[in-house]
Amino acid sequence: MNVLAKQLGTVQPDWAFEANPRMGGAVGEAYTNTLASSGMHPEWVVAREAIQNSVDARDGEDRKVAVEFVSRALTGKAKSAFIKAAGLGAIAGRSDRLGFREPNCIGSLSNPQAPLRLLFVNDHNTTGLAGDPSSSDSKFYRFLLTLGDGGKEHSEHGTGGSYGYGKSVYSSNSGILTIFAYSRTKDSAGEPISILFGCGYYRKHKHSERTFTGRAWFGHDKTPGLDAQPVVEPLLGDEADEMAAALGFEQRDLDDLGTSVLIVDSLLNSQGILEGVEDWWWPRLISHKLDVKVIGEDGGVSYPRPRKRDQLRPFLEAFDIAAGISPTNNKTHFQKTVGKNEGTMGLTVLEQTDDGDFVVGEARADAVALIRAPLMVVAYHRAWNVGSPTMAGAFIASDGIDDILRSAEPPAHDRWDPDARRLQDQTGEKKAIVSRVLSSIRRAVKNSQKTAIPPPPPRPKRLTLLERTLASFLTPSKKGTPPKHDASAAPIHLTYDKEPRAEADGASLRLRASFSVRMKAEESDEPLRIRVRISCPVIEDGHVGESLAVKIAADVALEPDSSDPDWSVFQLPPDTSVKFKCDTEAYNPLWTVRFVPEIEAVGEQ
Image (tube, rainbow, N blue to C red; front, side, top):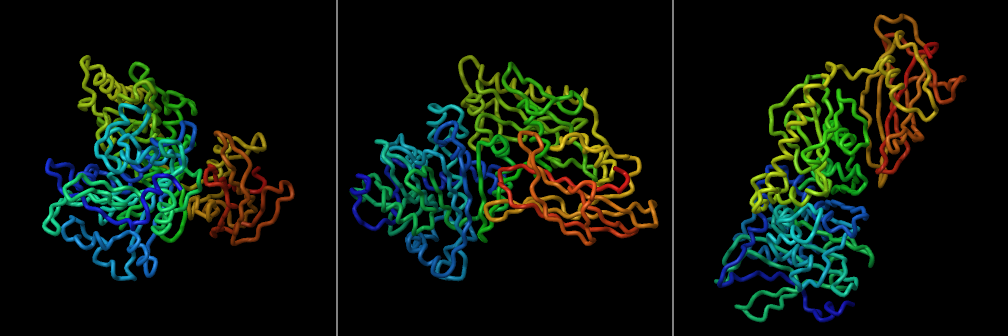
């Protein structure tokens, strides 16, 4: 057991409320109000700030951070055991003065059937809350005991946070403003240690004729007297591990460094968190520098798949152009240098949907995703009227101005403000850089639109043989040159009944899709003999790899094609659709796959 852990003894931990000091100080509400009016969905704010905290704490530049969002709903004996372990009775005893919003769990604590909702945010491959917990320089102290500590801005390069307010995202999404943190880390001597601590950030209130700030801590109260400065020690070593188990935290191995935060009485839903991860962290996800898993109350596991989101795909394409991964043609795809080599931007012309709208949505049409070192989207920026042709863009800031752009961000890190107070210097150069970047982004968009080719008019999702043939020439084949087709004969249509979609299968994914094939109305009164081939190749570094095994169910008999075993043959009656249901084998959730159905009339190949 760690030396500090031994010193704590066996006194039962409990909640200690901070008495109002004579010289004042921050009240509990200050810790929960900072990001409460960001204008974003709460789930998005949690996804942005929680992952940013973990990325900033990564254990080395080359380590891929892993983050899990785990939702649970406790009832019956499990709920009662948690309430006792977490000491919620001490909070309930003064809850009418703590400023809780409705609904919250306090009124139903005694009802075993009313679910108590918890959200665990676990990270791995980070440093954890490193350092001596009693030191103001430790990550434990900065994360749980201070507000507005901008130490990262002065001592760390390439981080996302800098204000010291990101921690408020946890308590502000608790119905009772209460969280616990459990960390496996190393102390100041480099020895492995477990730490557990609880924090409550409540309204200033009176209790038993004394005034309290609203700040409260769960641990061992070592305050020397009623009027002394509060001293509450965290649980350490084996005691921390045992309490973590009682609270439902995932148990960590000795070398599994990282931090887990528990939001008690969570107000968040898993689907919203998943969408928030995809919307704001796709640059780091597709760069293979972040793994995220979202587990719902039912135990279902979901993984962010930003490339599957139609409304995000144009921005991902622009990012690949900016990064030099995808080519440009200066007609529909553009790459621009911004400012004085202060970053690179990719732009792509948006196509319209069947309804004439843009798939990215009205708010993000003509917008540019602003991205810097942490690889989070700071904002989808548009400070101009939507132009024509409408575009989507991605700007990747150069490393040399990353610290300046970070200083231009408000506490919510949701824009770059050239008038930010933290940019002030005697020369005005920092403000000039931010202004130049933003104006250069606008100018690059407008200049590209002058030479861009407008997109084709909207078309239905129906796939004809002609469309499939053209696609075959644009898509690399693992078997060499694709067969040539007489596209003008196109006698059949393929229409999706269920778009290809990845679905969780335990820790893996399966891609499922269904489609219908029918003959053109004017084509023939006789059945047609049709060939079908369905594959789902893995995309590796932009190239088409081997196909996953695909299970096919059809409402007609499929016979092997004697000329090519990869194809099957069936009879397509006139005026009747033939339906296909497809299910791939399980595959790694980090893979990108492409569903490829091919249909042609026999004799047309």
